[in-house]
Image 1 (cartoon, helix red, strand yellow):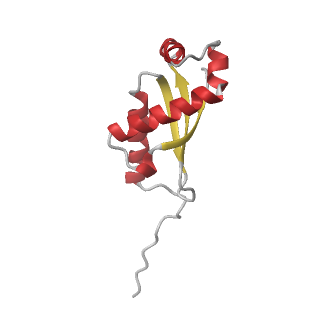
Image 2 (spheres, helix red, strand yellow):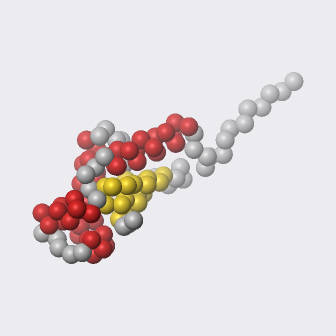
Image 3 (tube, helix red, strand yellow):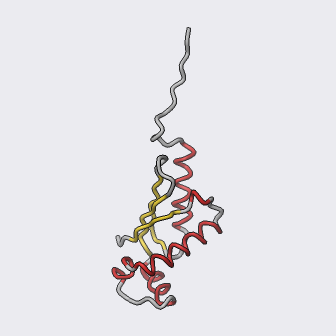
Length: 112
């Protein structure tokens, strides 16, 4: 009698990995500039990406404090603002005890 134990394919997330993704989304959802978020990670890649729906009022105030003006659509496409936001999200993730590989390294701002 021979018993073979099958492992799931590498592309299939384990339960702990799926739970970790949910936790990361919740961390970013608590940030005042984000109304909704989707965080995606692929086991074959070494970075996470995110799609964030900004809190319009807070994003406009944040941009104004940084000296960046424009409509909400223009702010979502502004490369200077996105660079500032990347630093902001990195600092926030670290303050929430996310490890380096759990931080979103690229993101897209999308209006609802």
